[in-house]
Image (cartoon, rainbow, N blue to C red; front, side, top):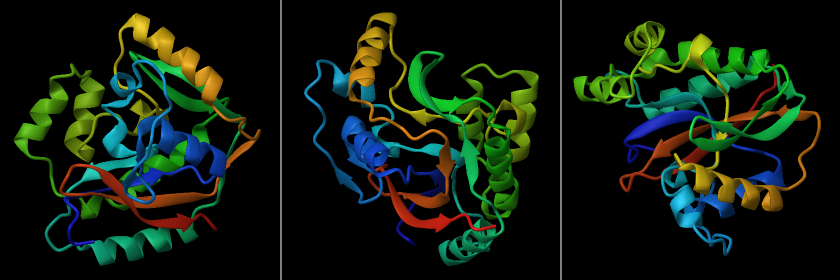
Length: 224
């Protein structure tokens, strides 16, 4: 684990059909750390080039560099104990949606318990996070933050946590309207049937490799 540049806490789908679909769609299997052949769809490389390196996931604690005094082993041990204290989260389901200019799977119905789990991850592991560099803060601010997002950026190193958090499993980068329509149609055809209700039973520690791609380190079952 010492070779990873940054770490993050993700939800990686444990529904096999969805995990297989997500790896194929993006062209990167975050669980195995290997590339995947993508479907033969016009424009798919353009649709997926931005999110590919992260793998198919939902962010719970965004990527961070380890603080002095922390270590990958201690982080993993803490996450194991944390997962033992957290119950599985049940959603009504997942549905395909547009968020701004990109497409993602989002919770269908009330997602407050999932948002609570995410913010618990943000808070519980913030001691492992090295403070953001000025260049990173400037990059975040370039997107145009609200006063509340600026407050969260300074406190937690990321502007879209707590009440600004919206869970999503990213499927595309930012697309123009024509590409959004084409990608949406392709996804409608390819997405597997998903269980309803949809239960999140695990969380995962992932690391960013030297090539910038993310890979699963360990998955932890929620047993609280």
